[in-house]
Amino acid sequence: MDVLGFYPMWYVPVVGSGFVIAIIAAIHVMASHTSVGASILLAYLATKAYRENQPQIYDYIKKYLLGLLVFSYVSGSITGPGIWFSATVVNPRGISALIHNFVWVWAAEWVWFIAEVTLVYILFYTLGKIDQKSWLRLAWTFAISSWATMYIIVGILSFMLSPGHEKWFTTGSILDAFYNKNYFPHLLERTSYMFAIAGTVGLAIAALMKKDLPEKVYKDIVKTLSYWGIGGIVFGLMFFAWYVSTLPERSHVILEKVIPLYLKLPIMLIILVVLAHFVLAAVRPQAVRFWMAYPIYALIFFMGVYPEEKIRETIRKPYVAGEFVWVNQIISRDVPAKGIKSEVPVIDQKGLLTVNPFVPEGLKKINSQNEIMAGKAIAILQCSGCHNVTGSTGLRPFGQKFAGMTDPNAVYGFLTSYLRDNHPPYMPKLVGTDEEIKALSAYIAHMISKGGSVSAKIEVPNTSAEAKKEVQP
Image (cartoon, rainbow, N blue to C red):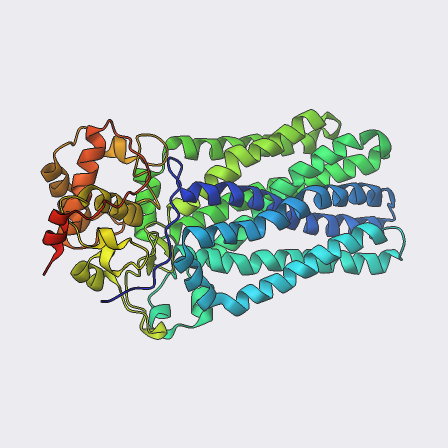
């Protein structure tokens, strides 16, 4: 019997396992982008303080560093590993593919990250205790280390979307994988927007310190943050347009036809709000208020970062890594340079239930007693990465997608014609034997007949005497 290297499937009813990653990732992106943008902004302000002999700027820098320590480097350090831990549980084969391609790149990222975290503590506790020139060198080293982590991780994130060309499949080169087609626009877009995020936090801190800073220093800080923020928004939009032009065709289809307006509209609105806030601060620095700046920062998370991360994760479908690992962990194409073979032919011949080592023995051979449960197992294994396969609410629910379809034959006709023979570019092909697809059809029809919602539990029927006769050769 052929057994493929699958791992257990983690199914989260209603919201889907991907939602768990999305929440952790959005928090991490907010924290990390704040810290990376702030590292460069603070290094620039420290240079300004040193060259123009404005020591009061250091008081502002120390307050900002404290905010980074409390928020970014606590929540960021927790959610960073949290992303990869949850992603490993959700799609271990996808993470394995990334590790096999980027193991030393990832190691380098951790070196820079350790340097970044170490330096932020050193900067905070040595400010005012060592000479300004030495502290300034440390500040720029911190900025370089912080941005280096983004420089590296963007290469991995971009490869998850697409290698961008066919070359990598034949060379297997780490450079072909890392410097993929959308790497530089992706990196520059994130770099630009991080200044807007860090600048918004900076304005909130400046507003709190307004009475503690000389008026000239306060205005200088606010205007500097505003100019950097405006530049970040403008260049971010330019690089976003470049980024979109490098996306594969399937991603364009998803952006235009699949991504709902309620995810796109908040991003456009928050960009306008943040830009208007920076313009106001640049024109009238005294008008900056904490009660205005801090809520805008919070809105960046809910209206900008979260929907953006959700869209970015969606447009890479149906893949989770390098256009050869589907979201359901199935290897979908050959990668000659890595000695990887597509698993689709084997699954179509042997059956998904047969080749998956974690499927109970009582479901590997389909019969009249286990057909519904076998179909549910197939739905979880193949579809739960993007759908709620047991209910009518939450993540693209089967209960709504197949509403009214209580005839197994009708469901079977739809599945074979739409998902097996002519599947959309953003969905994996429906694989498995014809018998398995019929079992999946029977399960879906059964679920709809039960009102569109059933238990997520898979119960393996006890083998009766009649069932034993059915499975005998």
